[in-house]
Image (cartoon, rainbow, N blue to C red):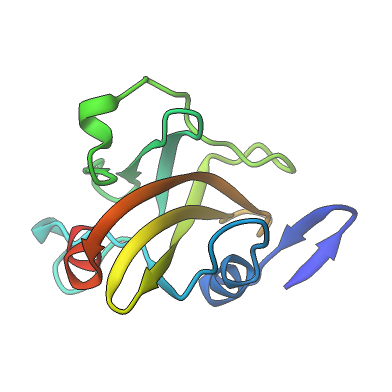
Length: 145
């Protein structure tokens, strides 16, 4: 992880996960997981590059798989969709990202989720939205991501 000015850059999704775990002024991130599109058309290699649409004020997000255009709605985002624009990198304007979810759980119960992205062009990292989950079993949340 590098910091240039006030921007953070990551070499890969592992660096992005480290950045997510270091977030402050929020619930502590106790687990991270990487976004993948496991649509059958990808065979044995899930897609990991996405166009990301998110609205932090509304707490909605969805990913559009670059490899096949498949849409992944984050939890109940489809029910509350606000038609936000596609995320683009503040540094280079690229719209394709890798995604890491940061989860705060207590004793196996997920309570909060943050969505962070890494620009595939320059490595710039950014948080795009977060959601209060209430109380969802961690295993159930992981299965839905």
